[in-house]
Length: 317
Image (cartoon, rainbow, N blue to C red; front, side, top):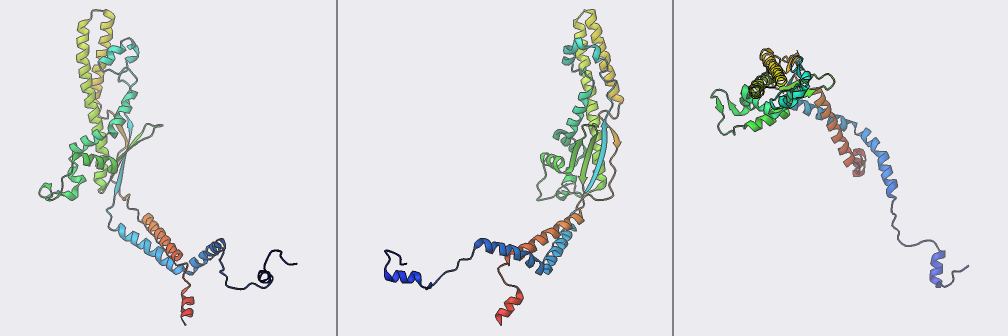
């Protein structure tokens, strides 16, 4: 049956075999699937290259650790000092809470002292005070300091105290607390194990001294204020209450003066560590081997379009 409306030549072309030139377009999905199936076999054939890349990466990482300064970590575990006996008479003086507040007297249970101690120990101002009191600038920036001449090296920019505070707070010391036990851990990372332990214990001692001196000064200021208020009133009940407040402040000042561990007491003082904390050679070596292996896989993947060496040699002949 002939196609209506078509010329005779066109009908013969449709009925006869195909003729002319044709372009075969491969299926992209089939090609990608074939490459994915072939890639594991390529990796197996290139096992020597992958092994060499992994070993080389691990050796390079281990070699780099030889040029890294060992870092030691010292930890001091402390607990908040016992606050019983301080502000112990506040429960009976609630009627003078306003006067006590003006005098700077805490009528609570002393729990605020724990938060104050932790905030002080973690503050940048305390880090600044510790750096200044221990003269740590030449230690923190030893590469710029000429120990023989006792001055900063010529051509080296002397570090500022702000730089030292940032370095010390962000890279040297870490303060962590456990809300359940209220224990506080002071961690110091430094290149000398002895210095790391000294700094961890020294920070605890300094915060004790600082808060103890602040407590004595506050008690003295409160006593001066209460003495003035006592002279202004003739009401017997108010005078008795003020006498109780004065007695409390005298007791607080006395206990602060004799209490060495005013804010924190040591549970486990820091000692000089015997083993370095970093660099961890085994971990860095494993990481270097993994990176080397990854580089080898990338090389194999980049060469996926090239035939194996045996096939290239055969093609050349």
